[in-house]
Image 1 (cartoon, rainbow, N blue to C red):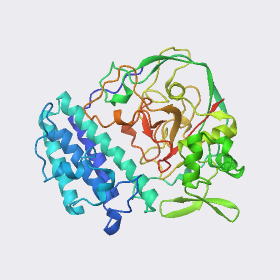
Image 2 (tube, rainbow, N blue to C red):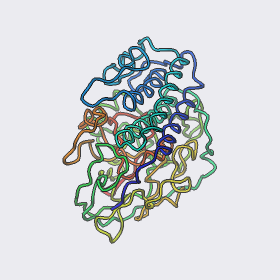
Image 3 (cartoon, helix red, strand yellow):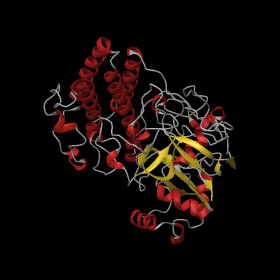
Length: 435
C-alpha cells in the first residue's frame, strides 16, 4: 500500500505557502478597473473578492482559529462579513464594500508575514502543520479557479514560465488496456503522515470487476465526430437531465468551439486557434461526456475503476501507488501540471507517466469525469473545514487526475475533485471504458 509523504518541516511548509502566494500575485497583478469585478455569473467569483478570500482563509485557519471558541479578531475590520464564503452569498460578492486591490494585497502580505513568523516559532506543532497545508492547497485550488475565470471572461492568460503545448505535439494514443479487476483499496491510507482531505478518508476494500479502459482521454477529433453526427440534436443519446441541460444551454458543440472555413476553431483565453486534433477535448460537461459515451457505445469509468487503473499494481492484490508511475512526486517528464505547458498537450505525450496498466496522462493535462456522484466513503468524519466536502455530497460528479493548471503538490491518485454535471468552464475532459 502506498504511503503518503512524510511530515513537511517548517521550511517546506513556508515554500508551499509562498509558491501559492506567488501564483496568486501573478494572477492578480495585471488586473485593473472592471476586470477586478467582472460580470456577475454563477460560475465565477469577482477576482477582487477571491484574492481577499484566500488571505482571509489563511488568516482564519493559521492565525485566528481557536477550537471550541469564536475566532480571534482579524487584521481588518468586518473580515468575516466580506470574505467568509460560508456566510456571504455568491450573488452578494459583487456589491460588498471590498477594499481596493492595493489594500487587499497589503492584507495578504500582513497575514503571510505573521503565518511565516508563527511557523518559525511553532513549526513542529501538528495542528499548525495541518492548517498551513490546508491554507496552501486551498489557495492553489483558487489559483486554478482563476485560470477558469480568465478563460470564461476572455482575459489574457497570466504570465508564467511554461513551454507552448504545440512544442510537444505527439499525436494520438488509441486503444484500450485490459484491467483484470479484483479486490482494491479505494481511498487514502491512514498509515502515513501526509495531508489528505476528509473526502479521501479512508482506504476501504472494494471489489472491481474486470474492465477495459481507454489508454488516453477522448480527443478533439474523436469528439468532433460525435458533434458532426448530430450528437447534440439526438435526444436518444442524452439522459433526461442531460437533454434538459442541452436545450437550456443551446449547446451545439463544446462551449468554446466555432466553425470556420469548414473546420473547427477553439477560443483559448483572449485568442482563437485551430482545433488541435489530438489534444484531449476540454471544457465539456459531465452531460456531454455521458452523451458521447452513449453515441460511441462506451461508458465513463467508476471512481473505483479510475483509481484502480491509475494506482493498481499488477499481480499485487491490495497494493497501490501514490501516482500512476510509482511513489516519486510528479516531474515535467511525467505529467502536464502547472508550470510545464501553457495548455493541453496531445494525448500521446508524457509516456513516462504511464500507469502500470499502460494508461497515459491519468495525472495532468485534463481533469477526467467519472460516472459516480460525489459522496462520503464509509465511516466519513468531517474535518474542521466543514464546508469543503459534506455540503456537496449527492449533487456533484467526481473528477480525477488534475489538469495543466493544477499544482503538482496538491495531487495524488486518491484526490477527488467534484463539480455539478452541467459545468463546462472547468478544465475537464474524460476517458471511456468498454461498455
